Length: 381
Image: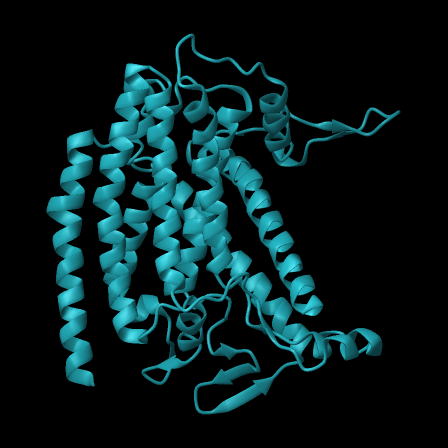
């Protein structure tokens, strides 16, 4: 029992560290990637000076995220003259907390066997015994349902923020956020249903394990090869859920100043912005888990590599664990960078176009994809 507690505390610490680091690093990635795309230098002014020297550590502007965080912490917490105090204070946390909780059901590695990992330390190996732990904070049969449940809660925070601010721009942003969430949450659910039919489970760990096999004798059995159309729809709907350009109508600066968080300042505003960048990483993690084989490389399993033709390459347990952790993080970083690429490539829609795109274009395509998947699964079985 104590061993289980220790392992899961380590998992929770790892998850929080990864998400907070992603939230910080992606602010730098967004600036630098935007600079590269528009042929600029980008953020490079913040630095740390080595004490008693004139040496400045600039490191390509990596310290800008730290400078932003420090500014948010020490900035004056301005509040509107008329507002609902309780809802106003609660809203940023309702937006921020569920995003962190979603990561609890996402597997970031395979099976961990502490006795094998600490074989060189007999006392530790003996203490853990033969216990095996999945590298996932909460291994639930209905993991996908938890993702959608927590994902839908954050919009309540956006609506609370808009309503409690007593500002017409904030209220309009809140209404837009609610309408947008209803529209694109449905599309996301329909795209994932195809994978559920193929793999026969809601368990994210089982979905990843199914993707460690081989398709057509040479392709990795990743979800993107089973459902390429659904993968495209899922990514578009997820970006819309995160309210990022071209779907950033709930906070459109040119129309609503900052939408539902117009009346927020200091660290309360920082929580809204930080939650947006962490959600980029969560979307990348979900896409990786559902469509890119999760923490596994092509032809990889918890025991090593199984290549086409039946050739096996067994690997030590510690090496497999490290490869899986690094593979998962690299895939998430690539998908996060892809979302930022889209943000700086496409112009913003009008709000009526955003809703029409969901209901008249993406929803029929998602339904058609689901219908084809149902027929194909029925015929093949």
